[in-house]
Amino acid sequence: MNSFTNIYKTLNYSKYSYFRRLNLLQVCKSRVTRHHGLATYSTDVKEENEEMHTDSEDNHHPGYDYLYSGHIPTTRFQKTLLAIGSGITAIVDPARDDMVSAFGETTGYFALQRLREKMLKDPVGRQILEERPILNSSTLDIDYLGSLPENTFGKHYWKFLTKNGFSPDARLPVQFVDDDDLQYVMLRYRQIHDLFHTVLGMPPHMLGEVIVKMVETFQTGLPMCALAAMFGPVRLGPVHRQKYFTTYLPWAIKCGSSAKFLMAVYYEKHWEQDLQEFRQELNIIEPPPGIGRKKKNTENAS
Image (cartoon, one colour):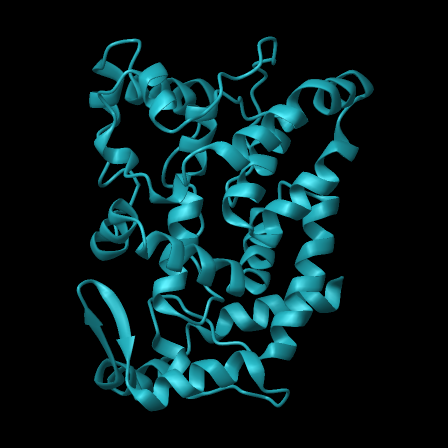
């Protein structure tokens, strides 16, 4: 595990390389353009992007070094090492948000592609991809959300943040996704994770996280979500585990498969809406009663 940690640190250090940034900034600026808010590439860049995920050789190409701010280029072999090491670490210690993030990014390429295509087919999803809204303290008026009526979605989200000591700034940036649009899809997923908790009525303790991850598995298809949904119940106590399998798992499966595509929801436009009404619009089944409200400040990378 120490060797894996050293590899991870080395990859992180690469993003601070002045020489690389200086020489490659103009390369990517000249070869990557945007059309209606979506990244488009010249033919040779598209071919190189496909080779990154199909060739068995070392496909490192310098053009990837500046796809977006903070991007760390990795080969298929490096991604495999990161996926294995981060996956094991995330299972052993779910609070390691850096490992959860690394596993999600190194295993989620094809799922992110499907999510992007599905968002493009939805008018609201396409709008989100074009406008690229960011959810953090710079764009979110927390005090305003706290002033909203008790029944509103925004007020419930404010309660979720304040009662649990959470911040919209806690989500880690994307580093290992080799596509600008896909890195935004991953970032959007991370930033609306707490909104999933709010609209699903699930607290952020271990049982609530496992339930949300099961819903997200059906909604996103991300291997990271499936891994958490698979191994999460092992960490539950006997009582919670029984409740999960008898009550919450059937609800999560039904909710995740029948609800509207939650990645194509512009949540920022629904703060003032009644939460129950919002759930009905999203075809979200009323959460099962009786789930606890213990506070646990983890899952910053979800």
